Structures are given as structure tokens and as C-alpha cells.
Image (cartoon, rainbow, N blue to C red; front, side, top):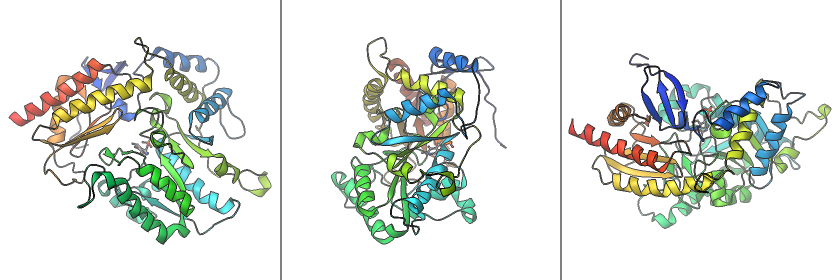
Length: 433
Ligand code: PMP
């Protein structure tokens, strides 16, 4: 706060925000990775207004609103496999917190109970939100170290980085290499492990670390072999960000528990969901005197206004644009184009690496090529490039020395090209000073 400079937004339209001083800014981080269809989308605005004319909020404890019920049904229909049961909360961290408790309780109440299963395996540099359970799973020292006296200790897995491999590991063998590290940990700890919790395909807060293709599938197979639940935290990757509705669909994986947040409402209102398979759900099914229920509840979980806009947001995925292209297809086309452009940018001497899946992209700046840098906020090149972009009208926020590019999914080709032009121009400017 000692160096805080106020940036106050007055309004938004499409992919653009306007400050109280009238400056237009392109929302290059989708208002913290959650905006999908742009700001003030007429269908999303209308969905909230219509719901407001009926009821703004009722609890989902002991009752629920028909809008919330409808959304739950539509959501689970879109989820892979038998992910048939949605538990609502208010933010991504809470969805993970619920998954942590759910998986532990599952092993106490499933057909063949395994009460020794009380621990979790989390990946290197994991990020699962800022509540105590999420921070316990978290592996980003800069964010998490100070809270260690409060935290439970997970079994720590590798950081399955696809672009900087350990010596002697060829690219084609990367997924296998990291999976074999997970296998070793499972051989040692499976009796005490309730779940493996992972961010599938891309670890966002770690600096957009992309996993090798095939890693998630192998983790799913290992979870089956060792009888450990798989929790996929798709708070960041969910709702089209990687080019499929859910990242786990790229590898035809159904997790036992799927955590969703951020884009669930198109980036309009706070809502999250922890979606469980029928197998998990059944372990909780019982009469109240059996006390099998999930003892966890949030006042605003399943809020009808949020559910109304979430329903409208999901329906927009089916709408072709003026060229007849549906949103997920459009994300994939734009992503391919942007990856080519980013590879051109990678020729710049200050750029160490470019990467991404879908519209979840990163430019890593180089203090030191070749080694994966810890997140280092003191290293201010990325801050300077972002400030330059701001001058040009592009709002982006770095993660340490990584420039994060996460535009709304509906951004046009011209807007996306302009975004990369801004980064290029700002880099050149920073270089010249
Ligand atoms: N999990 C992941 C993978 C995330 O990226 C985030 C937020 N960036 C969270 C959980 C926490 O979500 P929220 O900020 O809504 O609590």
C-alpha cells in the first residue's frame, strides 16, 4: 500500500474498461481471469435483471431457488463423466476447501472405509486459493511461507513443467518422467492419501506453468491404481479458458471432484462449485440420524442472481458468432494464432520463454535464460513492461517476471493482435531506457 497508485474504474463495455478519468483500458487479465463474454453483455445483464424481479437471494440450506436448481442441472450435464452433483459456495478458495473436506469424509463413509486417508498430495508451486486449506496445499513460498505455523503438510509432488525439463529427460518422455515421480510418492504414501489435488494442464498463479501433454491422464490412472481420489482445481482453467469447457476434457479425464469458480458466472458475480461424481455423492447419502451429510455450508452458496447469470453465460457457449463460429472453437483458433505471434516475440533478448493453452498465455522475461525463476516481485522488468502497456491502453498484471495475458474469451482477432503489439512496443521502450 505504501506505493499504491489508485486506478479507479467507472464502467466497462465488451473487453474494455473506462477509468473515472475517462481513460480506456483493454482488460488483458479478464478482471482477474474470470471475464469470458466481455463486460455489460446484454444477455448477462438481462439475466440478472430478470432474476432480480423474482428474488435476489434465498438459502440452499433446507430450500433452494428454481434458478439455482436449473443451473445445477445444466452445469452437471456439461461436466464430464459422472460428475453429477454440484455443491455451491462463493469463491474458488471455498470450492477447494469443500473438496478437501469432502475427500476426507468420503474415505470415512465409503463402502470400504479407509479412515487413515487424511492427507493430500499437491504439486510443486501449487496454488489453490488463500484460505487455510488452500494455502496448506499451496507451494508458492513467496505467498505461503509465512503462514506455515497454521498449515497442514501435504505430500509435495513435482512441478510438472513442460518447457524446462530435468537434465536427461527428453520432451517426449516428460509426462512419463513426472508421472513416475508421482508413482514413487504414491507407493510410499497411498495408505494415508485421501486425494491428489492438481490444477490440470496449466498452473496459473505459479506463472502459467504448462504441463506436458499426457501427464493428467497418467495421474488419473495412478489415482485409480492406488485408490486415491483425484481433485482437479479448474478455478482458473474452467469455462473455456484452455479451449475446452474444462481442461480435463483435453485428456478425456474425469476427476472424482472438480473445483470451479471464476468464469462460472462469466465473470459477473461471485460463485463457485465443487462438483462430485455419483460415487462420491453416494458416500454422503443417508438419513439425518446417520450423520452422513457434508457438514459445510455457505450463506450465499447457490445465490440465485449468480445462478441466473451463470446459466446465461453457459448458454452463450452454444451461440455462434457472426462468422458462425462457436466460442470454444474461436478460443482455439485465436490461441493458435497468438502462440505463433508469441513465438515471434520470443526472439526478443529479454524474453526467456512464451507459453500457454487456449487464452491463458504467458511471456516470461529473462533475468537469466535457462533456469526457472522463482516468482520474484523485486525484479521489476515485468512491472515496467506492464506500466508501458498501461500507457498504450492495455491493462495487464505480472506474476513475478511473467507477463500474464488472459483476455476475455470474446476478444476479437484485431484486439488480440493489438494486445501483442502493445507488449512488443512496451518491451522495446523498456529496452531503450
Ligand atoms: N484455485 C486456482 C487454480 C486459482 O487460480 C485461484 C485464484 N486465482 C483459486 C483457486 C482461488 O480462487 P478465488 O480467488 O476465487 O478464491
